[in-house]
Length: 420
Image (cartoon, rainbow, N blue to C red; front, side, top):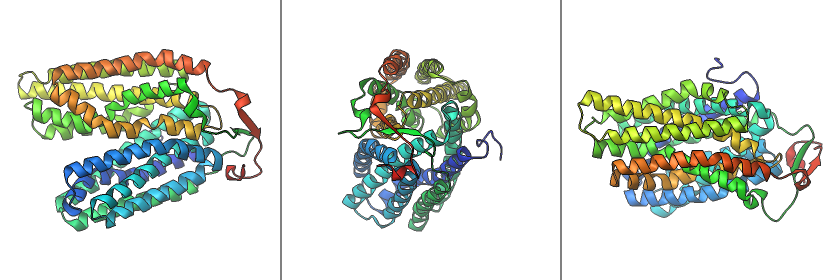
C-alpha cells in the first residue's frame, strides 16, 4: 500500500483506512440524498433545506459535549459508538416518509457525524506524536477525497437507474460504510497507557471559556466558507453568469478532488510548528483572494476556450488555497489545545465544518450569484483578512493557553474509560 495514499503501517494507517471506508458511504449519500428526499420521500426543496440547516446547526452545538465525552470516557470507545450511531441514523433514512421524521433523523445523523469527527481527532491525538499529526491528517484528507470519489461513482450509477430501490441501496451503503468504520476503529489500540493529564472536573468544558481559542476557531470558520464554494456556489455561478457548458462543473470538481488526493500530503509536509502553520494559512488566504478575482473575471465575454482556461486557473488557485488552509489549520487546532482536552477542543474547532455546511450556501449564493463579480472580491477579501488575522490570534491564544494547574495528572490502570 503506497505511503503516498496511506501512512506507514500502524495506528495512523488504521485511521486512514477507516476514513476511506466511511467516505465511500458519504460520497454516495451526497450525490443521491437530495433526490431521494424529494422524489422518494416527497419533501419540497424548502423542507429539505430547512431540515438540513437545523440538523447541521444541532450538530455544530453537539460537537463540544461529545468531544468532552471522548476526553472523559476514552476516544476509541466513543468514536466506535458514534460511528455505529451514524450507521443507525443513516439506516433510519430508509424509513422516513414525512417532514418531521426527516428532521429528527437528520439531526441525529448530523450530531453523530460531528461527534465522531471530534472523537476521531481526539483518538488521533492520543495515537500519533504531535510532530506527525498534520502529516497524518493530510493522509486522512487524501483518503477522504478518494472515498468520496468512489462513493460518488456508486451514487452516479443510482442516479442513472433512477428508481426508489437504487436510492435505498445507496442509503444502505452509507449505513454499512459507517458500520465498517466502527469495526476498523475498534481494532485500533486504546491511547492513554502512559501517564497523561486528564481534565480536572469543572462546571463546563474549558474550551467554552477560552476566548483566544474561540477567536482562532472563528477565523478558521470564515476560511471554511471555501467548502461549499466548488460544490454549490461555482456551479450556480457558471450557470447564471458565464457561457461555459454544464460539463465544466464536473471538470472543476475532478480537478479539486484529484489535486487534494495527489498534493495534500506534500503540502502538509512543510507545516511542522505554529509559525509555519500561520504562514501557510496566510498564504492560503492570499491564494483564495487570487482565485476569487479570477472567478470574477470569468463573467467577461470571451471565447469558450479562454473562458474554460480562466475557470481552470481559478479552480486551481482555489484548491491550492484550500490545501494550504487545511494543513495550517490542522496544526493550529491541535497545538493550541491542552493535553487531555483534545476531544472538546477539536469538537469546538471542528464546528466550523457544520456551520459552513449550514450557512455557507446562503452566504455564498448571496455574495456571488446575486452580487456578481463584486461579490467575488468581497469574498476574497474575507479570506485574505481571516488568513492575515490568524497570526495575531494564534499568538494571543498561545500566550493564554491553559497551563498544568488546570489539569490533573494520573496513571490509568486501564483504558481511559476507567478514569473517574
